[in-house]
Image (cartoon, rainbow, N blue to C red; front, top):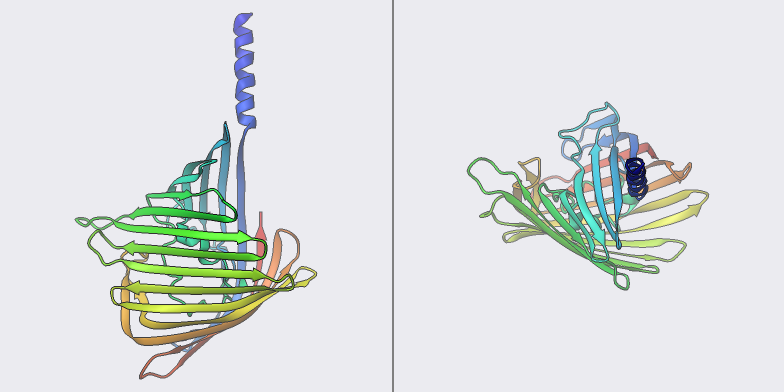
Length: 338
């Protein structure tokens, strides 16, 4: 009899523990058709692609209440190409981490978004999509967003102010020390005002010159429209490029949102090449190149989880001693979240 009672007690205790745990399967599907004119070649192509607003993905996330306000958390997330089902390079390459959260904030260990990535797209027009005016214009979007072997810490919010720091170690070729990605952010949000500052450094190895990214973002919600502004800077040794974007989100009612803006980039850093994983990429430096971009995009919510979007973006590249180059994108897409 005592054995049966002990077994029943154990099962009840186990059930109580599971009742305080949760696991969620989630994801989104984003596909679009676009007609593009390449600014470098002048060629126009029309094709279906994936990830016009957000990269198509699926994932698992969950938490367990450990008591006293402490929780254990995890998240696995993988991106893929909706147009052909391509699964990308590695499993759960977007995120794969485990951590703890509580009154002290949150800690994550594994492959997680960097602190810089937390605020990078926070005030960019057109939902930071392929139709955002900075696309094809900015260079500060080429940072490493989810370094390997990472540690991440986010503070609790104090009067609207919060922050985060992160550090990751990237794999290196034989005989070389590992590269590193270190970043931080500070942000404020209260009422109609939002402001954020982010900074990230990337080194190919312990002796390499650091590539440095800075982002300052702000927005003000007027009700009838939200004003958006962003500033960026990328620096490598004595060379640098500065960038800015101004835009607005205008809700039109009935599920419609109109968004657009103007972006500009100018400096001696003209682009990147080399390592596809960003850390250790080659930095192209030359005479100052000026890039400008503008766009207008519309988003319509068919439901809380499904929306359609479309718009136009154009960009121009001015290089000293060379002819101007023009590019543009017309796109129409469908986004569903689950």
